Image (cartoon, rainbow, N blue to C red; front, top):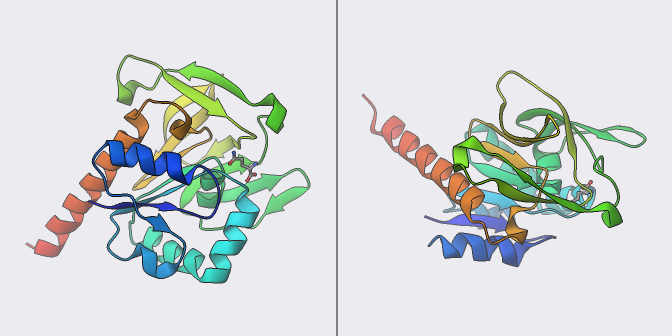
Length: 204
Ligand code: GLN
């Protein structure tokens, strides 16, 4: 199974290393043709406007958007969460959505500035009894979400790890700790979606 890592900005190497430690081949993705043969994609943090603009220029934004609408699994961390959000709020008003698909409203930079980056431990029942250490860097805040969104983890009552269908998103950076559980959770989602696709294509 191959899960690509969007290689425009951010912790590309760290995400690839986490996937490779799980035995998953993790090629870098920069252009639409790099999506061929992938079972899923991780989008690292960075600056969502820059990443979105560069993805748009290469045609990757359109190509990935089409796949997402067909059920392609994507995990967006931090800026990646912003790229998946249906509604994006900035300091001076709303931004147009980039890829969309995830029925959440996010506020950019709402967890404070770079120097106010922080860590916390949050419980995530899906990942077992051990809490997950989460690292926030100018992170987006989920202001609201639709009924199809499942909240897997929260901080102070606000969602920070959410999923909807084949999409997973976190406001924090799981690649900056040694804990592989969130990457493993996403890989399991990707596997399930492949199995569902195989059953569907086998027909009745
Ligand atoms: N502040 C960034 C944005 O708005 C996200 C920060 C991050 O990815 N660490 O795109």
